[in-house]
Image (cartoon, rainbow, N blue to C red):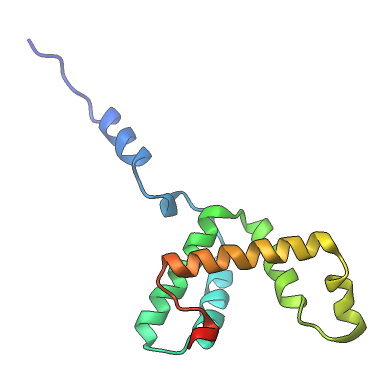
Length: 122
């Protein structure tokens, strides 16, 4: 009599073999929509193509950053362009500048992996 093979080991193996994006950190839907819309404004092109590429970029970022880190880094990156004295509160803090650089590098790597051309290359 042959031993009965259960499905649980096969299911566990399949889950462990899933791509990284399935294990990504959970970002709120509204935040995902805001990011994708902003990305699509920066990268005009065919709507469906840019929708998929920009979604891919955020999925890649979500695979590497917990949501709280994403909020901190993206807020600092966006606030870095505020002019005058108010903006200096962001520009003068080296720790925030390091986070901004790290976030921009992550965005660039994610864009490359999702075949999204840099905004300046349009």
